[in-house]
Length: 269
Ligand code: HXC
Image (cartoon, rainbow, N blue to C red; front, side, top):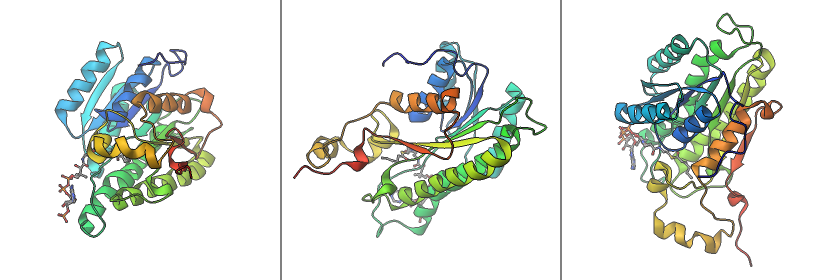
């Protein structure tokens, strides 16, 4: 893992709540936010994963707490956001990294399978944003800071074109991107909240990759996608640190692809 090029205090004094923060990309963002000065709350469905993540963060000297919860449940979302505020006294950053995924052809996918991923990725993201709003909004009774907070939605590039056996995820991430833009407009205007996204390409050592792209597929990918190169979780976390820091203060409503240019890739002819 490379050293961070950012100063270690760029997120000093910030409190970040991350869904899906117990593993994969969410956990790496939590780790790097902590290394850059933030205090961390993570929300996830699996107690064991949360406990392991919290002790790993604590061993780096990062204040961290884990809350069990499912973003599909409004009462969980509300409880976790409130508990985070009670624990730290403020919330500055919400990262929506929780996602559901599996490969299924459109023909074989049940409407409930489609809905399940929409519920986790799209509705879950909106629900978390909605519950966190009062803590993020500038001028609200729950916010003493002189600026509004930040929302970061983890998306994908699948829906820029079309992706085999990912109709549910493509639809869900398209909705996430629309949510990013619409909240950026409404809450950027009214409450000084920046709402941005990151669209990762294939990232090594993540639940997504091990589930979606077996080795035999990725080893052939370079033939038809010349820009195919596996990214690291670190790459996504560095984009998140940039967007969350003051360096990103003029960025609002954007979803930044971090994929080595892969989605543009065409075979050489
Ligand atoms: C077909 C499936 C299925 C599968 C679930 N379903 N898994 N259909 N193939 N493999 C269908 C079920 O049949 C059911 O529909 C409906 O979905 C709900 O299933 P449940 O098992 O009841 O749901 P649940 O236990 O809540 O689990 C949902 C889940 C989730 C989506 C499988 O647990 C999950 O994905 N967890 C893994 C998290 C993960 O991998 N995160 C990384 C995401 S990576 P019926 O009709 O039968 O009731 C990512 C990257 C994207 O997002 C971009 C990559 C490049």
